[in-house]
Length: 459
Image (cartoon, rainbow, N blue to C red; front, side, top):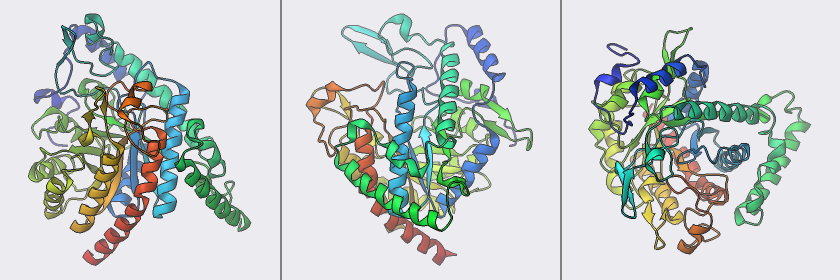
């Protein structure tokens, strides 16, 4: 990349990067991270990009999900396992119902930093810096806790490494074996309508596996029956950390951000002349770009061209986040602008961020019906515009939380206080996430068939 260096972003204006009191301590931490082992590898990011290229062509679907913001306090192998279970459950529903392979991408093993709408917050009569994520400061409301601490980056790196180690074991050690699909269920949703439907799906898969085994197609001869590719992602917000984790691939000389397989640029940091776009244009990882109501089609197109000048399939994922009642107003213009420029992108839907509100009981929440409605509205717009809605990006957890209202168990505003554990934004629990997968699977299949026919006609 001409005129690009791993630290060239420092010459550009940047937003939502913390200011540290001790620059020497920060540089000491960053230098140690630069010499630490990579978390992911160049060959893995290239493999993910190849899978995302299939999504561009309507031959696969992207499922991206996980915590709003990972925390140090909730770091536990059971929590990692349960989030992994839910993503496996959702992907199985979508694969079987929509007849499409699903690219599984977690918001995990690095999703710590969060941009905030205000630099400070008040509690009572006291005003302090906002909580910015556990890799920067603490959620505890006191002056010492809210001061950005560089050493927290060490703990974030260590937790990400441990999380990835466990995810790799789950993905390739037999836990994802389709014959063990019954082990993916979570205890607390055993009596939900979703689990009854999932059990029916289990039975159908068992029949299919029995037929395949009779034909000699077994896990012993086909490893894809008992392993999955599971990738990691987070917002590339804390650029000093991302720079410290960027390495040169010895086989190609290319730069890869080894903190995650996939990173995205947020709706608040996608300035064309800003440091986040500058950093992302030089790394080979697949890049996501969040697009909200303030997005302009020509601006997003220019960002895509800056990051992906070769128009490579699988490199760019556009993640729309409008709110269920704003999709028809904004998304068609964006689709037309991107199509006009002939850009290859994955179109993904984030139905969470645009549907956030404050409940009558004072909790930040997201109504489940609005989440579902945004996804369906996005699919309808893409179909009418002749493009493929190829992805879903959600904040969810395998824990039995009560953070989003509605769903089959009809969580109310009054229920939110019972198990409201998020460190930032409200997440779907496993029951709601699985219900969402069942509700949208038919739309995915319909949209995929329509898109593939349109692609064939165009070629």
